Length: 181
Length: 145
Image 1 (cartoon, each protein chain N blue to C red):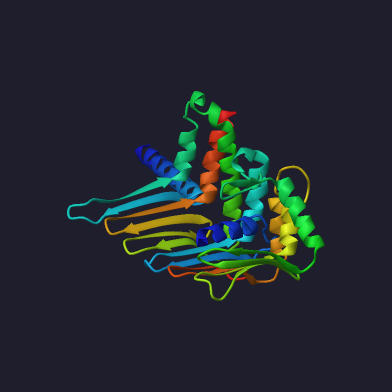
Image 2: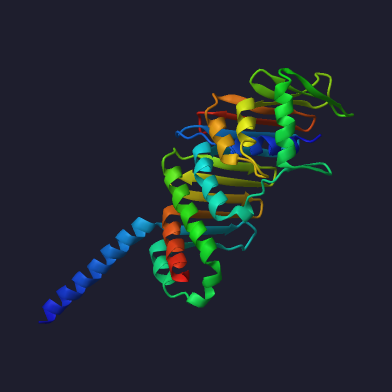
């Protein structure tokens, strides 16, 4: 398990849903023990403005057909089917993944899809993605993720932390709020 | 007679200067600054008025642009939209990456985009007025079509 994977997942959800009205920002912070620091501040309205144009005029640049997980490829149709089944089950633990680095629990908790490691794990990971955002992302049919809809759903959310990772060598936070820094 | 010619020439020069100044201010100026930090290293700054670049775009042979028409149009449209969006926000650090030996800073100043790379060996600073750049790209895209 690596923190970069969680950043990628978080950015996928966040960049695919933009706040419409002005002032919502997506922030990423990475601090590592080798003194490397990364700060990213992106106005979500900027993404919501640019994304539809890219989708319309440069679809070949938009890779949004399913996801790769290790060596496996999950199609959008499969993701949609899995998601609907999971939601139909209500709030409960979806899966528990055990590895040498961390034990990970995936669950739907109220309005959020949550991924959390146990406190005893070497890496502490917390991911909170609003269910509405996932719904929007998987809305529609065919083999395309609906990034614009997901972005709009995210922009409708209040400020909150989406991803937090604390490992031995890095600390990562991804959140949205109304501040530009 | 000589005096009238002198006044006319002066008025012409002043008119051109004012016109050029207005155009330069309207389109902005791309600034590239490089500073080499080793002994004897060079330091130089290259300002490129985008008004001049827009005029120069008219002289680019169409044969060299045709295959890039779509990309130019897309880049022009994106640059204009991003310029409008950025102008609506306060000046902001969009990306900052630092380690022991190098820092990369991407920030906005109005609707200008600034990239500042500073390492132990050199510093490179680039400032691009996005709206002016979009106009140059649009001129190229129009010519390509």
